[in-house]
Structure formats: structure tokens, C-alpha cells
Image 1: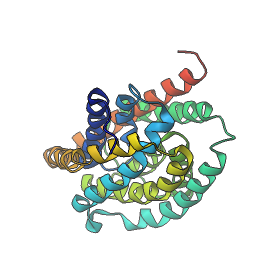
Image 2: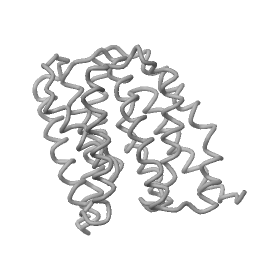
Image 3: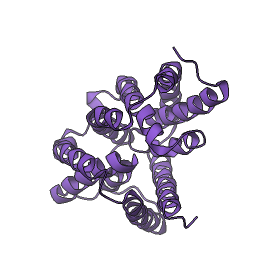
Amino acid sequence: MVFPDFSLLLIVALGVFVIAFIKGAFGGGLAIIGIPVLSLVMDPITAGALLAPLFVLMDVVALYFWRPKTWSRIDLFLLLPSLACGTALGFMLLKVTDRNAVAILIALITLAFTTLWFRGGGQVVQQPRSKVKAVLAGTTSGITSMMAHSGGPPVAMYLLPLGLPKAVYAGTTSSFFAAGNLMKALPWLALAQPTSELWSLMLLCLPFIPFGVWAGFQLHERLDQKQLYRICYSLLAVTALKLLWDGLKGYGVV
């Protein structure tokens, strides 16, 4: 095993813990919030290669808490097939499409969505399902997840307006992204081809995964429905700002 620098390990372990914590507390889809920590010590492609297999392990742990009884099967039935198509399409577009433009577009749409919710009073309401919106959300999530680790906003913009119970929302997003992360793990590893040092980092970060997911689940249990939705919408806005920053930085604007 090639042992990485201690300061590198400390920062990467913190990023992994934050991502695992978010998965445990709010389900899948908001992991991009932990990626800025990793960006302090590695480029986005390397971070993607590091996280691809770790995401799968996080999902395995998270699904211990978010078991099938917490899944909205009717929504997963609509979302998962389109996710598979979107992931394949995203992989094909990875080398020919401008990631910065994709990140900025998703960011602006997400910011508009969250702003409208907060301006409307931030209430948990139940809107009717739409098969068209579900397919569009699943496909877009697969594309943006492959291209920018940002598959969360499209699915959140579909699921949050449904007003699902907090455990069902977390369980549905967890199972959705467990499938998505499994689909994209091998393509990301093939794209980045991790070094022996990166594999060592992955192994050393493993203990932080169950601890992070468990700690996040403890927070979830203490939040009521309205509190959890407010935090989810707030985290979604932060995710959008992170995407906007990344996109603008790619163009040299910031």
C-alpha cells in the first residue's frame, strides 16, 4: 500500500465524512456539497475517481437505514429506467459537451426553483405526479451526474414538490442514487484510472463512511417534516451555487 500524505488524508477523510453524513440525514443527491472539500487537494476528475466506488459503499450503508419500506416505488418505477438512459448518454457526451455550460444551466434552473419555493412561504405541499416530469428528471439526473456529479437537483425538483413523508423522500433518493452510483462507478474508474495512492486513500477513508451515515441518520430522526424540507431546499440552493461557481470558474469568470 502506498500511504498518502497525512494532510491529504485528513482533508479527503473530512470530505468523505461530510458526504456520508448528508446521505444519512437527507438521502442521496446532495453529495456535491462535500466535493468542495476534496477540491482543495485534487482536481475534479481525480475526485470523481475517488468518490465513484466510495459512493457505492456509502449507498450500501445508507440503505441499511433507508430500507425498501421507505421507498416510493411508483416514483422509482418512473425514474430508474430514465436514469439508466441518462447515465449512458452522459458518458457518451462526457468528452464532447461543455461541462461548464451544463453546470451553469442546471444551477440557474435550480436557483429559480428554490427561490420560488421560499418566496411562496416554504410550505410542504403535495402536487400531483407527472410521468413526463419524472422521465425528464431521471434522464437529466443521469446526464448531469456523469458530467458533474450533480444528479441531485433534477430529481429533487421532481420529488420535493410531491410532499413525500421525510423518511420516504430520503429512502427514495437513497435507492435512486444507489442505482445511479452503481451504474457510473466503472465508467468513472475507466475514465480516470486511479493511481495506487488513490486506491490507498479509498481504503483509508472506509471507516469514515459508516460513522458519517450513522451520524446523519441521527440528525434525520430529530428533524420534523417541515424542518427537513427547509434544510433540503436550502442545501439544494447551496448545491446550485456550487455548480454555478464551478461553471463560471471553468470559463475563467471567477
